[in-house]
Image (tube, rainbow, N blue to C red; front, side, top):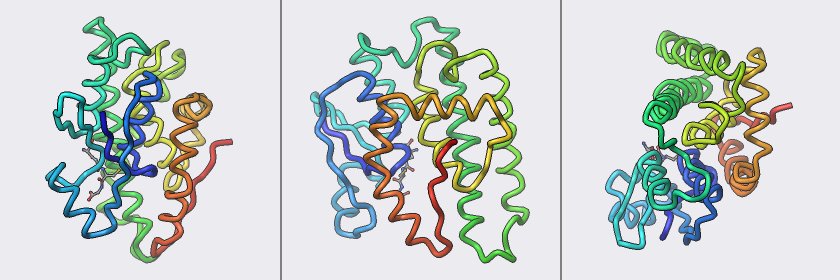
Amino acid sequence: MKLYYAPASSYSQRVLIALYEKDVKFTPIEVNLFDSESREIYRQINPFGKIPTLLTDEDSVLFEASIILEYLDKSFPHHCRLIPEDSQQALEVRLLERMVDVYVNTGREALFRDRQRPEAERNGKEVAKPKRLLETALILFEQKLANRTWLAGDEFSLADCAAAPTLTYLRMVYDYGYLANLTSYVRRLQARASVAKVFNSGREQMTRMLSELRYPLELVPII
Ligand SMILES: N[C@@H](CCC(=O)N[C@@H](CS)C(=O)NCC(=O)O)C(=O)O
């Protein structure tokens, strides 16, 4: 199995966390999307030019992080099930993962773009709606985490693989420290071996990318 990825890419990190959780052997292939020639070559594998992509041992090409995770969970069901067998619980896991993607990631990207505008142009109407939806999702997570270890319950799942990179990077542009359960949850995520391993290997690339921005940003550690 080959994984096309970049160490700092949040969608790549989601897949890497799952691979480490499941202790699956794979060949990592780093893609430099900032280089036009590498990007062109990579488009022959993934026409959208997005990372990650998984090339399976049966030569299937899979894109979209959540589809790759579904494949890994079905193919390697014996270590750490990411999607519960119980169909009701599986729906909850998929719903939470979708909320991370649709509301938290979209809000994070909108806030990130906003921080790359001159200060006088920030906080305009284009950011109001994604920010409101982001906050709605975070409050819902806060309520669910009042009596849960992981986002969907007692077991680490697909939803946590998605939430770990997203909530870690979100802190650069949005301080959710006022949400105590969510903050403790992110601490638990970052202490988990698979998540710590992924962040440690992505930190250098992310720190460099953030320092080269028009309005530089920094990773904000959770205290
Ligand atoms: N929907 C895709 C999103 C993947 C994605 O946006 N990856 C980013 C890196 S985190 C990327 O490839 N960006 C390059 C680009 O958009 O050109 C997935 O779930 O895998």
